[in-house]
Image (cartoon, rainbow, N blue to C red; front, side, top):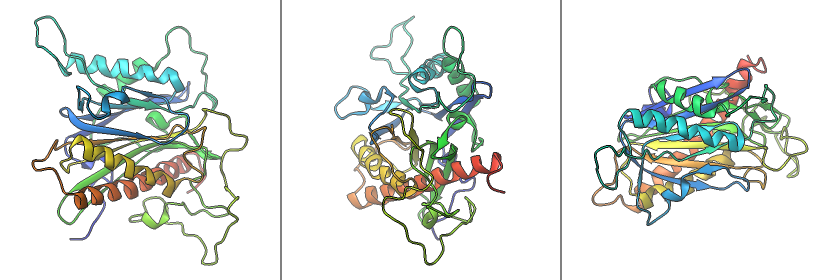
Amino acid sequence: MATTAGKRNLITDVAGVRVGQAQDARIDTGVTVILPDAPVVAACAVAGGGPGTRETDLLSAGMLVDRVDAIFLSGGSAFGLGAADGVMAGLKQAGRGFSLVDRPGVPPTPIVPGAILYDLANGGDKNWEGIAPYAALGLEAFNTAAQDFSLGRAGAGQGARAGQHPGGTGSASVVTAEGVTVGALACVNSFGSVLMPGTDAYWAWPYEMAGEFGGGRPPADFSMDPEDWGAAKANPVLGQNTTIACIATDAALTPANARRVAQMALSGFSRAIRPVFAPFDGDAVFVLSTKGEASPAPDPLTVTRIGELAASTLARAIARGVHEARRQTGAVV
């Protein structure tokens, strides 16, 4: 059996993972929640120069809590960090969370790290009154979590821009010959372009499976000036760009393994977007292991394989999200 895409070609091909999304078309923004069935080992790696994150310090080595209940990705810049409040409300109602000591009347605390992207200047009516809408969107996304979900203009990718093209939410998965599954989800609001200059081919084209983002290829004589960024955003403004993502796998990983996979997964951004990790990008990736810690811990070669699969699957998810958004807005057929 060769390495193939999963049945859905979504992050939810990893057993025990669901995704919920909510969006407000009037505001042109949204929230995506990655919801495991039980607390999972997690890690995070940040490479952009302008990140917006919540609870990521908990994922550092030596911290009290080494598992999470959910991950959220949100539009709205710093306003979007409030999406976690809605996700936590849903988890509390479900009785989930971390308890240092079980006491009657003391609820467990849900552990919900996440990251945001800047879509405030991308259109929509952002003049909401009172409390920002993200907590409500977070709870709605939590309540809609399922194995199937929409790509393109949906969830945290609702109001995103990828360079000069529509951005969006993308996902992809891969299953190894041994049956290990790695899935990726990305919300793409990048400064850089996902398309090669002067072509309709995505930078991620070498990793494409079964024409999942259109099958475009560069011409045989393709060449470019190293300073040609193609359809990147013009006149970038600090803090207005970001690609945020999550990797899930059913391979058993320790927290240290998960951190290494997250660091390796960052190369998926650079395979799909150019330029990337700029001072005005907030690029970040989370990694979840649904199997928890292995005993003994996986060997370094196994971790390397998972990290490489995470990177290539993330590159596919990025291209797929933008391709779907372009298709939905009529840019491609």
